[in-house]
Image (cartoon, rainbow, N blue to C red):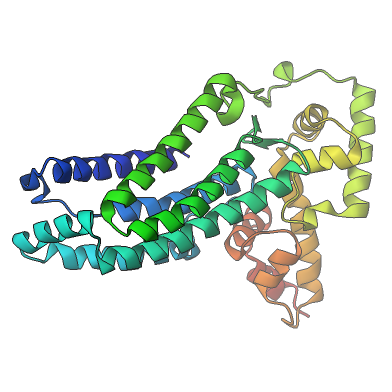
Amino acid sequence: MAVFFCLMAFYSFLVSFRYTALIDENYSLLNNYIPIDGIFMLLMGPSLYLYILLILNKSPEFKSWKILLHLIPTIPFVGFNYYFATLPLPYRISWFIRDFSIGTLETNLLNIILYIQIPVYLFLSYSLIKKQLLIDSKVSINDVSMDISWIKPFLIMNIAFVVISAPLCFYYANEKANIIIGELGMNIQFLYIFSKSVWNKGIFGTETEIRHRNSESLLKIDDQLAENYLETLTSYMQQEKPYLNEDCTLQYIAEQTGISGHHLSNVLNNKLKKSFSDFINEYRIEESKEILKASNDNNLTIEAVGFECGFGSKSSFNKVFKRHTQLTPSQYRQKHKS
């Protein structure tokens, strides 16, 4: 989310600078200016989507090469900016003036990419949030409880703005209209987030209950009640195997077992000395070990085993499996191959 805010700020600064220079006809300010604002706007979608994945405990693999796929739409923008930087100064200034008043083919083509990419990320993000809100409006990340109900109207507002602004953008087809539309969009988003953070300060976890693992700071539970909760939890995990679902969360387990989230967190931390993610991953690893031993003829790929056991990616499966067994899944399969 911090990256998202920074991208908004950089975009707003760049287009405001460009707008002021062209309105005042102070073209010398644009001598070293390159129109990279579109790149910042393209990165807003992925940053918001990855933020939502993080707060929903879906743990995107930032070190994986797959994260680079989010940068593919920026390639035409980077290519155009590289080409633009090699042009003579008089041509660049002339292009800025023409683009601002009547528009250019290059800008319209790049806008098509923008109006395809942005809705894709908005709808993906909306789908994730809508699904989570059916379970609970609060999520836990790093033992901090957060209310995510504000994100759904935020996404709906952005989707509506894109639908309304797209026809206007291509009707006027010049950078003056694009800048006004873009700045209006930034201001609406900022005002919404600012107002929500003022009246509901818990949206970023600033006024939340932090569940410390120190037993003295946790809500006290009677020992017998804790044992009953643990028995209920263990029985549910063994019979229903909710950990096989990648979207398994503490809130979901609490809802299905009838144990409050606070008590469930207490039982895991005090009785088992484990975080929720460690607790879930242990079940997933045990399940994957059985599958690997049973499929020693390699009829299942390592990635398929990981997905079947609730891991979102092959890299996260490998990392967690090695942490628990000191072996990679491939090494474990080879060791137990008969």
